[in-house]
Structure formats: structure tokens, C-alpha cells
Length: 400
Image (cartoon, rainbow, N blue to C red; front, side):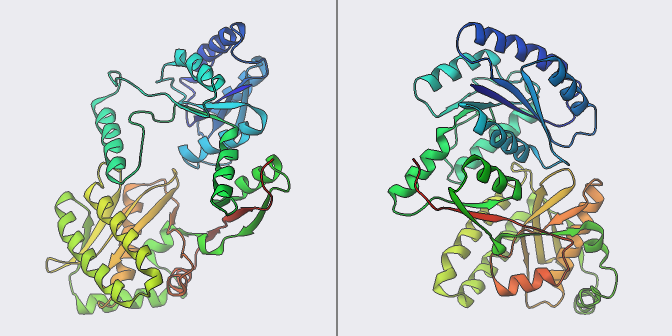
């Protein structure tokens, strides 16, 4: 049984044609004996604002091939994709993920299934040309794969989301973990993922809240304006920066800012290493290396940021990117710790930047605190509006 998992966001213009073509394709594959009659097209509506879900519901009533999952609000393409795959896996032998606009060759589906029948658990669909893409999409897509290779990721060039995965994939992860002498551990799970694992593999995992991995979400307007008594201390810190560095400014990150930001981070990194215990050295090095690559390729990676300056000298900078339509994620933040008020100013200024450039964003996600007491205290001092609870799952019994 095959499931075609298709995330959708405002796809009302293409869904009728996509459904027609995919229905014809599944009918042909069924007639050829490649798939069973319980195979399905699974649309995942990622909080669309148009008629996408209305159409999915209509197709579900009229077309036996079509099923749908609706997310409560826009969570982002990859989250919707994962949600669809996790919804499909308990009911299928294999799932194929693809885009709603059918930019990939659907005639390759036959080869996907044949490779699966030959014993492949993961099959990639690789584009051999991008002639139909715009120049911007083609350039940024190719740049993405090149940067991933620079980051050390063994990535398949031009495969995007067009792939088949078997139900055996999770079992393979478990087998690998046990071969290394320790149980399978899954981290960063949302409540949805936790509930799915419990339903799909009852009694298989022990779950616990991973407090060190909770994400801190803040109302964008509160961080940009710092209103009220609770945030009075933050405003005072920024006033002290005003006194010490009169006329300081912030501006959007540009390619010309990369070199001085790298120099500042190098100094910050060396100072942090001098304070850190041996246990934390590897983590600091990993973060530094990631930040260097992120800065050097921020445009290709779709990152945005700001830089704080006073008299030409950098006081701090921030890098982030949209996580969903309404949530903007803060990936990196640096400031000169000896300059009082620099960190609160970076924080507030980036919130102001995001509010100006992304009118639909409601929250800044300042990620987790990694269990570091100082970082936790700093994040809590801004009174988060929402803590995203994450879970850790540890396998309590070996696979069959």
C-alpha cells in the first residue's frame, strides 16, 4: 500500500489539476499491479488561507483515492511534510513525498515503487535539469545544495522533497542504535510526534519532557517595544547603552558586514573558551563553526540579520530566518558583553526589524536554553508568552 504525501499551502489554483493527474496515475499503477487499492493521496493542509481545505474535503467525498490532514495553523513546509509522513506510515508499506504543483516527474513513481519492491527503503527522485525553474529558484536551489556540502552534509544534489521511504526506516534506526549498544533515542519531539509514536508503537518508548529543549516564544510587539513594568529593567539597560554609546544605530545585515562580524565572533569565541569547562569546549567549537558558515553564506541560506554599530565599531549582531508564516526563528545572537545594554539592544532591534519586514509574524522563537542556567535565566527574564514543550523518547524494548 502506497501513500503519496503532499503538503499544501494556499494551493487552490493547482489542486484540481494535481488531483486529476494523480488519480489517473494511481489508476494506471493499480491496473499494472504496482499498488494496492488502499493506496492514497494524502494532502496535508498547512493552515491555508484560501479554499485549499474546502477542495481537499470535496475531493475526499468524491474520490476514493484522496485523504486529507488539516493543521490548525501554518507550521511550515517541513513540519507539514513530517506530519503527513507520520500520519501515513502506520497505514502504508511506503510513502512518497512530493510537491503540490507536480514540478517533479510523476511518471517516475513507477520506478520508485519498483525500487521499493527490490528492497530499497529510501529512494530519491533527482532532477536532471531545472529548465522550468525561474533563474532565482534555480540559482538559490543549486546554491543550497552547494552550501549543504560545505557544511559537511552528504546531500543528494537536486533531490528536494521527492523521495520514497519505507516503514522499515524507523526499524533500521532502532537496529543501528542497538548494534552500538544503546537504545534508540529520539529528541525534539512535539506532542503530535509523541502521540503518533505511542499509537504506532505502543509500549515501545518511554517519554519524558525535555526541559532543556523547550523553545521560548515571545510576542513580537513586546520584544520590539519592551512595554510595562516587567520589562522596565530591559529598558534601563538600553538607556545605559544610550549614555555610554550615544547615537548607536542598527541596520540590516549586508555582505559587507560579514568580515567584521566574523572578527567579532572570533574574539567572542576565544573569550568564551577561556571561561568554559573542558566539557563545554566541543559545543562552543561546533556553534562557532556553524555561525561562521551561516554568516559566509547567509544570503544563499535565506538568513536575515541586523548589526549594531557605534562609531563604526560593531557592538552586536543577530541572524535568523522565518520558521513559519507567523513565527520567526533567532538562530544566532552575539553582543559585546562588556558593553552594558548591548544584548538587550540587539534583542529589541532585531524584533523591530522583523516587525517592519515581516508584517504577518506574531512571535519570535528564541530557541532553547540547552540547560544552561545563565541562558535560562536570561530567556525567562523576558517573560516568554509560550514555551514549546518538547519530548525525548527512549526505546524501552528491542524491536521485534
